[in-house]
Length: 404
Image (cartoon, rainbow, N blue to C red; front, side, top):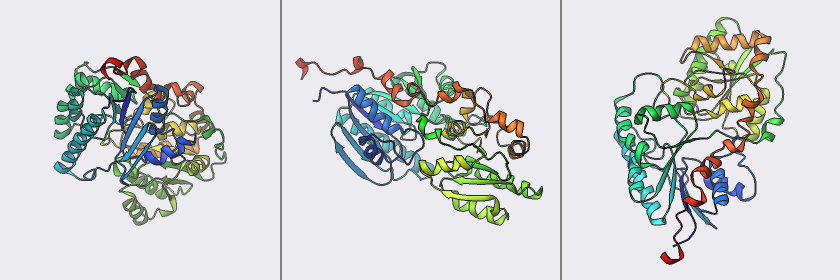
């Protein structure tokens, strides 16, 4: 048995092996704007002198062992299923994860949300592994009545968050509040983190065109109905009826609704107002932020938003960000964002018109206090530091020489 601390990390669907290749060279993964969580995990393992086993649900199955790291792309074949099959797939994936952790003799397991249902991991805790959930999405919807399945999962997960896990990593105040409500205030210790970035990534983003003769609005992220992409079509139709052809949308990202969005744009006769850029890497996003006048985050109330990194990226680019209280990042920005009521398409359109036409208001909304900007550059707010604050050297539980 190794004397080193062993940490298993279930990282979600990202390409952790590709990121590792860049990390080994001392580089950030150019596919992402933010510092990736997997690279921060590698940093944390290095700092803690720990061995790491990282499992991603990336669809391209792959395995790599290098030094102190084992990296595995382990797809969940039922990830995109619906109904009972979806939940059975999540439970089965969690049981496989548990088996791997025990066989590898992990002492700590950090698990990103979306990997499995949380109550499944109570078994891992029972078997002696310190389990630390990493929450990037809210446990439930902030608005509207919860569905029956959500109520059931909340009841099943309550004991895990109150008793079974060692600590909790959370990306927003909203997540903290929901966990407190779920457990009746008995939640395990919560450590918050924020998305973090290199200052150099935004230092060269150009200032927006002050003439505003062509007001470009940037949407970035997954192209899905619950991300509000179809609301942009309704906004464009309204602008067209008003004779406003000076406000257009740049869509960066892919998703299951991309083809349907393209079709709706065409049928509505507003294809002139949309440019589809597809998936954009860090360099391409740099260009998009440089050309944008504003950033829109129209997430719908039926999505369990956790923070939404695009808000941070809009702030770091000195662009006004329009969003609603569905997006928990709003509460971290001290009223500096352009807030509209949730799901209010008219209000989103009104906000864009005001930003386009009122130059004083526009300039006011793109000036962010330095402390709000710096929170995303401060690596002490990052995910790696959150791990290290939970998993300290004295927590290693390394066997003594006598027990080896």
